Length: 396
Image (cartoon, rainbow, N blue to C red; front, side, top):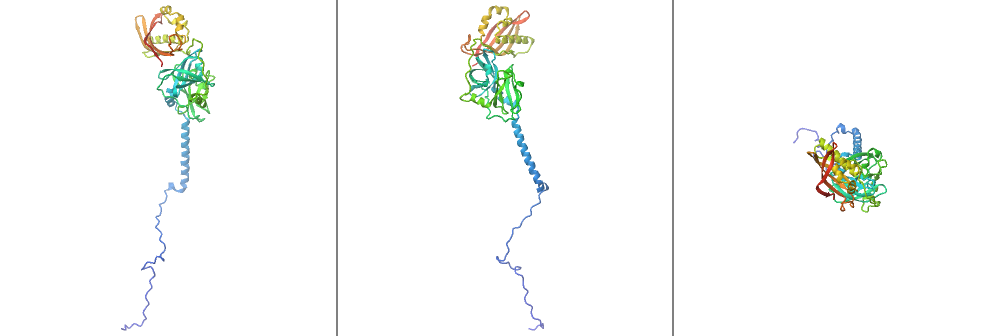
């Protein structure tokens, strides 16, 4: 049908490939996963702040290590004494020269290390603890550097000291635990191996034999010497020889041959366990003088402390024979009463003596409990009689 139009028809419009139909797999470009953009770093974590932060952490870590090392070099003396003090003992002996007093340290297997100068030519040896327990000891021998090795007789529940595994660092603090003359245990800082204190500034004669301890309370040395002026510290390596299973490096110590040995020549003051009244103080002085003079074996002077009645019935020769090797210590006055013209005083004490002395029966140590009747003579108290309240109790 003729519409009246004379124009030729237009060719169909070309449609770009892929608009209405998908491309083939060969023609399709590879798909990439969508990437979520990261949030920006906070200002304090930006790279320009990271280097100073790392440096700060490294410095802090190094400082913490220094603090730990520094702490290992310092000593808490109160804590060390609490830990090791019970294993530090007081050494008492009757010897030909009357020098038998020192400190010592109790190790495993009943071994005790002390200063050899305190037990030269011993007749009898004992050790006492901080709680007042007494045990006899045998002398195994002594070393050229002045260490005496003892073997305790009997048992103790006290903890035993341990030798340090190695020498402490040169800058580490050390201390010595020992006893002063009145029997009180003390601890004294010694400085370090690099910067030591002079021993003469912290010692007296009764501290010879005291152990030198590291910051953990382990034995790192022992103080020896004939006098404070000649005192020295025997090193840990030597102590290992004297306390090992073979006990090498020691030689037997000859026993006393003087027949009439004496104990330490220090004053004895009995402890008062009663009210400290003027009368008790007077009794304390009298009985303290009696103990001290007996230990000096000055049996002529002791007669001034006796009543005329006692002096008449106890000749000086008999008194001397009864106490030819004895040493009295650890005294306590437990009773003081006054009845008419008499004063009654009860005192306990320990007597150390040679096992072959008169009446010893092979023993070397007894605990006595006596009651003394005191009277006034020329205005002062003197001893009139003494009787046993309880039978002697062996230190064993």
